[in-house]
Image (cartoon, rainbow, N blue to C red):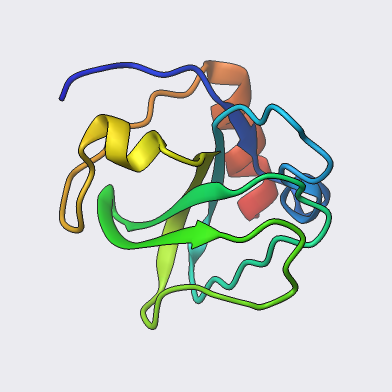
Length: 118
């Protein structure tokens, strides 16, 4: 719907492992990676999250993350973008499977992503 949202970006393995753990008022966080199978869990996440799995800027799967759960979830197909957002974000934005997303990165974040992929 052409709205813009500020977010954190998790690129390194350490940033992605930490994710939004221990966040009581989580921001939006974007996980960028190579195209691969992705599985997430909610260990040490005290609040529910909406989690969108994307492949080439298209939403391919949406999950509601359960607080403090160690149950793994994710799409059956490979993806390269995962977005974690406060629960209710998907409904508020009217997001559905197949919707397109656009991510704009600052130059420093883009350089970090490229370096991390080498």
